[in-house]
Image (tube, rainbow, N blue to C red):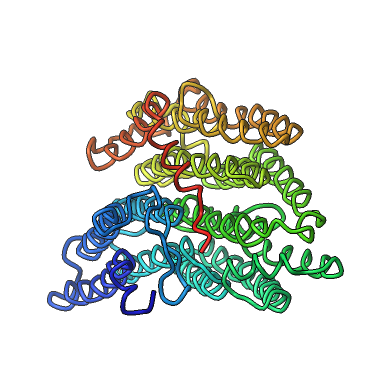
Length: 503
């Protein structure tokens, strides 16, 4: 489709663009009349914008796209954007993440009341818009521009706490690592374009199919460089080094968005490029390069390093950062399969990961609001000093992350491991199971501190607002319990979305 015809299918992104501008003007108006900000006007405007974008994405059925079933897919803006069930699945997931993080930010003491609060919410919406574009990028150029857009806004959001040295240090490290990864990726993309003569993924698949055996080393090097950029976004080893410091230094809502939204958008780009643009070529050139072996090695290294490094962590944000790295390794197992079943399992896993990881960060934010602490000692005896409900919810989220039944995380790992067995990746599945057992130690350690450790006289009794503080946490905890009973609709959506539009 051309530009004019494509606009009617681009409404969620247009809604986010309008919301970004609206938040800026609302902030100017709210602070200009009285010299100070009235209420939480920028946050409310951002919440409305994020909600509208999500509604328009879910309501794509009424515009001719049959929800997540991928009917009537096609190219937008002269093949720059692809609209199919795959992109809709990820945009709904990203829309839910954006909506939740805006809600979190409105309640966060690190964000609410800050003089640059309006800029924060506009940047948060801009980051969400960039991730929408990442999920539907159909060419190398669009993939690079959208990833850079998301990265630049993430750098600024990470350093939002301007008078916090830890936040500034995290933003600087994020910028340096991101710049190196982006440079490697764009260099690899230039090699892909030189080898295939095309920038859209369908043309890349055709171009790779025509390559001779002499082009294998060049193609493999190009794919490694491209994987560096995508691996940086999903925080896989060895591109993970930014994650622990950035997750620790950024405001908690930003950390949650990076852990859930940024990771999902990175996997969307990774799957579309490698599963369709590269593996879709089905050519001897691809079959004889060690792409699967490379992905397998990264999968093992990511899940193992993430879990082992998390064992000694005493800061909750840093612990969850290494946990997030480990879960990127589990998700990579679905990618290694290089088959539709692996893609479907990965999509299902990312949706389940949203409910448990976002919920864990939400509890960490609530506790930080009440105590000003993020270290594990601040959780000592939490269940017996007014925090029984947050402690119970955090226990649900952590045991779900560990993959214990009857929680949703068990289902997510079950389908990823089942896809690995079907793809005859028995060693990877065994390593994944061992890593899941290792992870249980540091998750259970947090639960032990909350329920079994005796609080001291210095540990304050906490009070929470039942609706504002615990409402969303309760919804996410309930989702982890309900999904084990009614998961068929989510699995069906993942299976439908796993069939990418070939063009």
